[in-house]
Structures are given as C-alpha cells and as structure tokens.
Image (cartoon, rainbow, N blue to C red; front, side):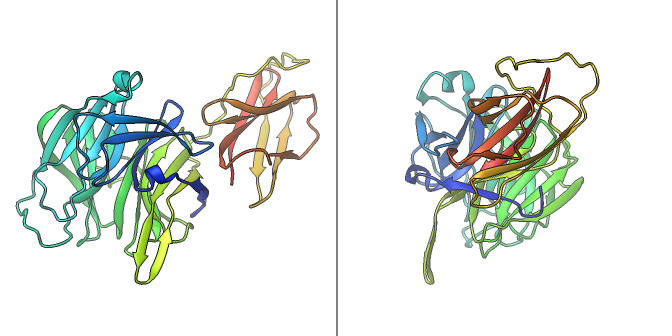
Length: 371
C-alpha cells in the first residue's frame, strides 16, 4: 500500500460501537464488542455495514474480549484484555465453524493460559501484561501484548488445545505504540499489526518472515495512517491484498470530543492477482493462444461518481463486470471494444469492489473502493 493510503468505508452501527476483534468469514465481517458486553458475535454485510446476524456464545463470558482469529476448523476469541495486569483467568475461546454455520447459539471450548514469565499480579495501574492482538500461526495461537509502560509488544505462543496452557515467549519488539490487532494473511504470509499512539494516531506494521519461533526478525515496515485520530482496534484480510480495519467509538469530556466507530479498508500490493471470475459467456469470443499482455490501472477521485481506468492490451475486450467482496455481480456490460475510459459507479454504496475485464477466455481483475 502507498504510505498511509487508507479509506473510510462508513460508520458502524451502534450495536457494534465498541468493536474490538475482526475477521472475514463466509463473505461477511464478524466482530464483537469489548469488555463488559454480551458474549456475542455480530455478522456485518460489507456493503450496507448493517448487522445481519447475531450469534450468542452460551457458555462464555465477555470479561475483556479483544481480538479474533480463525483457521479452517475454528473461530478463536481472545478474552485477553488485562489493563492492570492482575487477571488469572485469561482465556481464548474456540468455536467450531461447523456449529457456528448452523446455529445462532453456540458453545465454546476454553483455552486458559498464563504467561510463563509473569510473576507479579499486583495492581499498580496500567501494566505491560495487557493484550489485544491474536493470530493463528500453524498449530499455535500467538498473542501480542499491549505494553502501556514499555510502549512495545511481546509475542507469546499458545497451543490451540483446550485446557490450561502456558504462554511461551517468542520475542519482543519496541514498537513505539499500543498494539491492538493482528492478522496473518495465509495467501502471502504477511503479518499486519495495527495500533495507535497515546494521542490516537493509528499505524500499521507490515512484517514478512514470520516463523514458528520468531515474529520480529524479518522485514518490517511501519505505516502511519492518514485517518486522523482513531482508536483502531480490529484488522482482517479479505484476500491477498484487501484488508478491513475497524475503530471503536471514543469519547472524552475534557477536552470534549467524540470519535465515531468507523470501518476502513486498504489495498496492499503483496501479491499480483489476476483472478478468473465467473460471468456469462462473452459474445464473439476468440480462441487466442498467445499470452495476454495487458495493463489495467484504476483511479477514483475523492467524491467523484466516476471510476476512471486505463486499459492497455493486445487482446480484444469483450466486456466488464463489477463484483462485491462476496462475489455477487453488481453491474456488467458485454460489448466489444469498451471505448469509454470511465464507469459510472454512482449507484454503488461505500465498500470494496472488484472490476473485471474479459478478453475472450482470459480476464483481469483489480480492486477499488467507493466512498
């Protein structure tokens, strides 16, 4: 991504104004509220940003839910918030996806843990044993601490197995901020951390070279975000290059100001993607064995209803289509040539979309954001 190039998709509904964790599953965003709220997951439509489903975790308590993660079989919820460093009941709940898919009332298995090197549990105010970031790394879960005193983060690995576990220290990094979320993209093996400073200036850290034993020894890049003040809490990947972030409502009386909960998105350039997307058979399709040589560039000016594109290709163009992140086709045009250089997107709501051009039996896809 370009330095700080993040877009606001829209304001989140009040039911998730304290959004903390975030994952993308079954073509929807799933989030939860943080401490003291119900033990409940909320599914959101990425186009309307409305909550379309609520799932109660019947045998869990939301002491301080802070992040989410997933693998092929389970959804993991990190009840890992620990501002004062006094908790002896830190828990990661895991929910079987098969049960989650079929019921709005689910049970969770508990993975209870303590940090192997924490000896002092006394209340001395904000501590370095708080944590708000969780991700899956192979057969382990990784928790990243939010250090209020050292202003850094330490990574701990925890087995995925229910029961009482010991969180083993992997490594640490002086990140110069408060880490609040993490997502390891299995498409690219790139880890993104999100967080903010004490003055609510949000940032990302992009990390390559994560292994089972080290998190911070690879290539690292810090990206300061251009959102203005925001309490960014959650981050999740959609595909190889598309990410969503969520910010929690923040309110202060002196001085008096309020930050609304917002869903953001950014596009990375971690992998070149040239996806085939299903579409009606194009007219006058030709069988061309030659390799496709093309360049597709997209640009949308802030506030404009027109998506501008530049398409350079040696192939005949048979049409285009626009899809949302669930794969639903929003609009399309089948016509040889496509002479225009702009597409009217005034009817699209604020969200991430994909524009696909078709060249006979080939296609080229690029993401774009409406705001």
